[in-house]
Image (cartoon, rainbow, N blue to C red; front, side):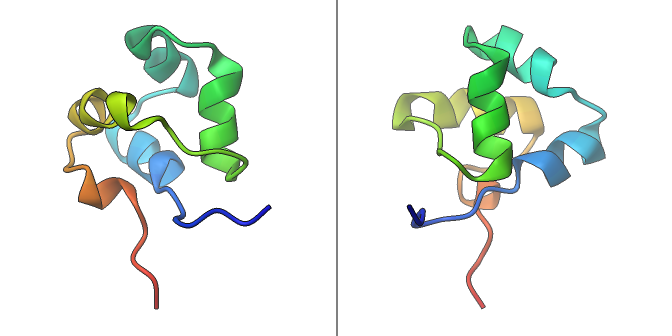
Length: 68
C-alpha cells in the first residue's frame, strides 16, 4: 500500500524534543497509532491534523513532505 503523502512527524518531533508517547497522550490515541504515522503505514485522520500541527509548532501543510 502506497500512501499519497509522506509525513514529517519524526523530524518535527525531534526538532521540538517531543516523543511519540507525548503526541499520543495529547491527541488521546494509542502510541502505536502515532508510530504508524511515523513509519508511513498510515496517516492521521483529518480531525487530528489541526491539533497535531499545533503540538508540533507548524502548519498542517508543513506536516507533509513536498514531493520532488
